[in-house]
Amino acid sequence: MSPLPRRVLRALERFHAARPWDHNAHFHRWTLRQLPGRVGSALDVGCGTGDLARLLALRAQRVHGIDADPGITARARELTPAAAPVTYTAADAPAGLGERSYDVITCVAAVHHLPFTEALSAFREHLAPGGTLVIVGLARARTPVDHLLGIVSIPLNVVLALLKSRGRPVPRPVSMTAPTRPADLSFTEIAREARAVLPGVRLRRRLLWRYTLVWRRP
Image (cartoon, rainbow, N blue to C red; front, side, top):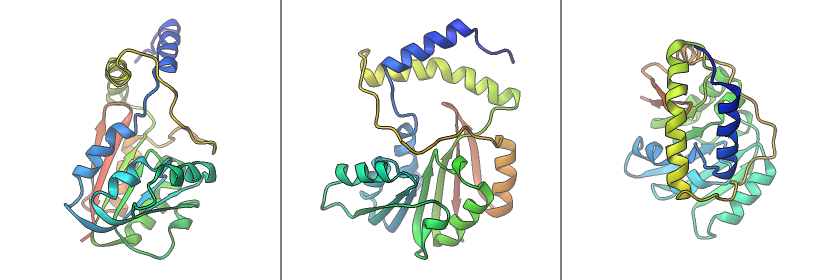
């Protein structure tokens, strides 16, 4: 499928530079809908500034967020009320998951930075029986379906940017200082690996250049 003309891409870049918004936060409420009503403990891997961790605290008795970027976890602590049952650690996943098990593990737009199969195995081992794993991830576009979803996402992205900014330029969100990288696995490769590690897992391609994965440990 042919790419968009360069001048169109430049126009889109200028538009979104003036009206940035958090694509990942768009999936936070969806993430909550995948969870039981109340849980004891939750872990958010790649927690960033803690937006999802604070939402998880509405459903969990205690929440722990980890992120590889010490600066971003420090900012997460600043933004989190002292009374909230949320803690943060600057640590690399999956090695930094520790030994505790959790009723819920979430990972939004971070798993493509990790060794994928190793990360899924670690998430599985740290889930308590009956626990829920929810991943919102990025995949490398390789198939016609991938490219079609990407093209459809462009006008949706523009509409959401206008709605969230109410048509006005807005400040750029706080970003990570740690190095980032694009996804290198296709959705087909992700699905194959996930099904081998997490029998019964549910995966779905999504708009806005994301896919979702939900698994409940027996």
